[in-house]
Image (tube, rainbow, N blue to C red; front, side, top):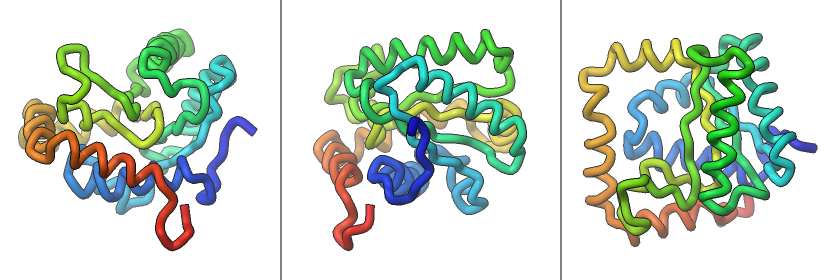
Length: 192
């Protein structure tokens, strides 16, 4: 099966923990805590070994969001096939073009996360990259209207990236790498 929503999946469990213990706990995204508390984040595992099928799942997820306004955002957790960051970036570019082609421009947008994420102007060991590093490759499907509303109510939306970079650099590469590695492991009590 291409899509899984089972909490038994290590990639999904790790992604949920990442959102809770990293993204929300460190306020990397100042809007995620509200959606986590409201339980409006959907987590879907997508086998990306067959890229064409994986991209179809992105569009299927857009259609699902169209018919479920109570879901604010979806994290598509990509397993298999996009471990190399360059391959992931190629897939991201195709997915973004596909959103436009399918009439979803201005309705949904994709945010990108990958275990080896590296900004074009950064070195691979720059802790700033951890603002977009995740336990597994992900495509974060966001509702444009919800994002615009959240940004309009934030006191300093333009300052979010600089604040996050400063915070990540204060944590340091070694600490952040250890945190991300720990998230990829099953929880000590045997749960994923």
